[in-house]
Image (cartoon, rainbow, N blue to C red; front, top):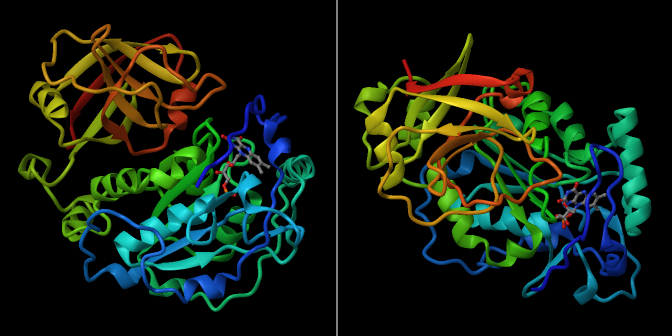
Length: 382
Ligand SMILES: Cc1cc2nc3c(=O)[nH]c(=O)nc-3n(C[C@H](O)[C@H](O)[C@H](O)COP(=O)(O)O)c2cc1C
């Protein structure tokens, strides 16, 4: 069950320096077909969320190093950096894919390249850099996947050089996802989702992707609750899936939103830019909803966030975390500020705890065009 973590990461999109070399991949791939044939819980979870009638319209496509790597035969699973060993061995991202499957009942699909990748980390890092630099799309194994059967497509992958592996782009290039709900999820070694959500969105040719989840590899074995909370927040695999889809289609009036079951759709306005987002259904977020519209004088910090002080003091500020996902709208009780996080950098850890209260769901690239101070207004979506 133990995962080994990389010690360092590349700068910009360049070098991924890591201690992974001390844990070179070690085991033989297990046949995907063999594993898919298992129907009972491979991964134990608490109280799975009820599966809805939409379960058979959900695809969980994922890429993992395991299943795509030429591992030597005489190696030992316990020293692998890309394996979660449970009753059997799984790729890290594959393990999360299976958690999602247990809740949603969707179909699993391994994205598999014709040519396996090397088991040697240093070599793989170079191969990946070259593939990225050349925009090379590796050929995928043939499959009988019929994309027209699915409305919701999860795309899972390990972060490679702060982005998606090129094989995932091959997959998105091969299938037409327009009109579908696209949901990214990824695993990483501590540096977050990088620019992968934007890459997924662009390669899927959809206007926006659902809020993704990025799980640090060492947390994957115990991530079942986190995954369930995320699925419940994005209303997939739970009884309110249909309601959420109506909201996404703009059919629900934000004023009529049932605060007990749905996030509140909001707009985040800065100059001429109007972004879309949500405020969650937490007691803290409720306090912000009551104050809408809120205008906050925000300033950019560290190439990753815009933050600014608010003129009221919320009372439900419990908990907090020292990391963030791109798009997070957060409250920090230490200095009574709100922030919008838009990019992971080489400084992924925060010095003050923040509490997520919502999320920007539209393209975050707009923040890269901002400079200096911004008056940013949070308002109920029109
Ligand atoms: C070539 C390569 C590049 C990687 N780049 C990053 C990175 O930029 N940031 C990061 O946090 N982890 C990085 N990792 C670590 C993987 O994202 C992480 O171990 C992941 O959980 C592996 O998932 P898998 O077992 O499903 O392949 C990299 C791993 C490899 C092999």
